[in-house]
Image (cartoon, rainbow, N blue to C red; front, side, top):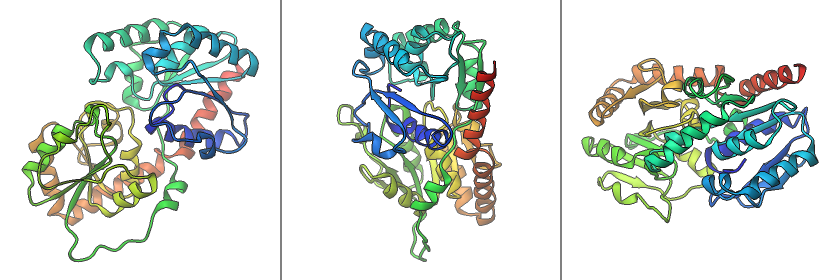
Length: 355
């Protein structure tokens, strides 16, 4: 795992938590600016961690010969029965250098890099070509959502999917009993870093259409490319960086969760909001539309006015609010949790070993 941070870090927490119960687990990882300090403390003490010093960002890893040598060396030392690669750079490097016919190799993009609108068209084209080339290798892509799976089928003959899931038990441990006061102001929120991917300009435009509603962005911007300046509407509050526990408690206290993303994998923040019985309103992109079924467990919108209309309709109809939020909660219980996710991964792993 080169990009050992953010949502992918949380996803791996859930995956490893279950896999370590029956298997020996090694994690070869790189450090990103948002990688937690002392990452080992977040996991079971039985997990073996190997810091890959040659991992240095996406392109800095894929264009670094030392990274290929180091991963090959780790493979020979560990002699794994299964290899699972996470994110685009790890997926490219691993599928190139590892003997995929000798050892079952799996790759989970968690949001294909060529969908990243933050990078140039040349970079996105480069990512796509590389995915297409290494897709010829006999490794299996395990997409994190049905939408990502449909994309993967254009890149490789070997693909399947397991939907991302959240750790319900861990989330329950962070929740508090709350009762809303009569003075509670209806609040719409989102969470995550203020990035191009999350489309803060659209979030701001929605807020300007609903001056009577309180909007909250749980998170902060990157120091190098701070997009807070896009959130100018006077009814928007930016909380700044919050710990996971603080973020969950804030999300629990608000009414509607929106995602204005330009692209996604299958966002864990959305699944958490669904579990917390928030009405979720999202953009029509891969990942979002895998979890949200329009007018069944939330809304999918294509314009600022559409978002505003949906928010108003939920504000004024409590029965509608309860129906949508309950359906969303039921979907998480049935499918989008780490228990279901790990059962499916275990089936895939065991089937590969039998072959």
